[in-house]
Length: 461
Image (tube, rainbow, N blue to C red; front, side):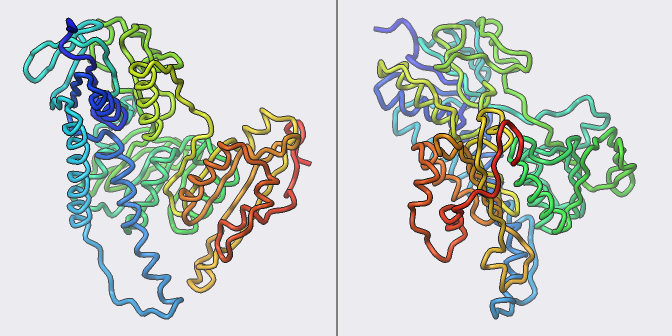
């Protein structure tokens, strides 16, 4: 009989932690999982799921406008913020219940408490003060928004967490940041009728994405009425009689009802007792792990955003399944972080997988770039001046498609399928041999027969 209370103790009830706990318990292991807030983690409770629901809500005003071009007469419409928040809360509660149901069904012990490490095998349950022991420990506590404490007035600002629980929809908002969280919320609030300004220190939003998509989205957002201030930062936020006053580096004084800081996320490691257990962390507080998600302490693993590898929910789940293979199935398995499909649920949407043109140019001596920009069929009758961009990056010698990038409706859905294609190692010839499905936007991916241009040694030809 084991000398430990549990075979596995998981700290953190997000997607990665829940998957590790549930599957280990289903294998007959004695498992406990502790979560101090709500089960489901960032994605389900205060991240991608409620955000996507808000994205849907924010699109309806354009749907109503577009309907006229197709012969529909739509009456006067109005929006109720409180109804949206209540409906979102009900759905999140349902999903949280499913997470708990799955754990309970696998006979994992569900603990609703903060858990902190005492040593490499001992965990303290903060709510009761009880200590328990475990042979193996997984830390999957995720991340949290960076509060940007260096900004005077940061305490007057909200984070993406708070955006889901505002009592009232503001009339105006300034969002600081240029990553996907900032961009998505700028589109959400604008779509719900809020005067929206995005302020970002960089030269262009979405710095890690392909340049064509970044520029295309920027132009589309500005055309919709979103104000974007690049090469600029907030210097101070203070209260005023009618809202908040913001001092910027280059754009003078701004006013807004709400200021959101979307300036990156930090690993949730503070106060977890990692130092007491001897677990190594980097300068940002992220847990350092090897190729198999094991920390420097042999029996302690870390999964998901707390490791600051790739901050995406499916990645945390994948890392959890690799942990199960490694620890419990005698099949050491490294998480595969290559060719991860990614979406930005902006308006228009971005879907991408593989290398951007800039990245590919650094890795490969010669490339072919296939690019199409066109007006989608729906826009011909709606009259909306939107454009879609589709782009394939091909390594010339092997003809292998090393990057695929889309800006437009359902880009995320297409990127998921392209993820299979690129993971399988398909070449441009495979794309060319594939019959087009007409009329669709996606048919452009298999009908771009001639390269738009070539790149050799980083230079466009």
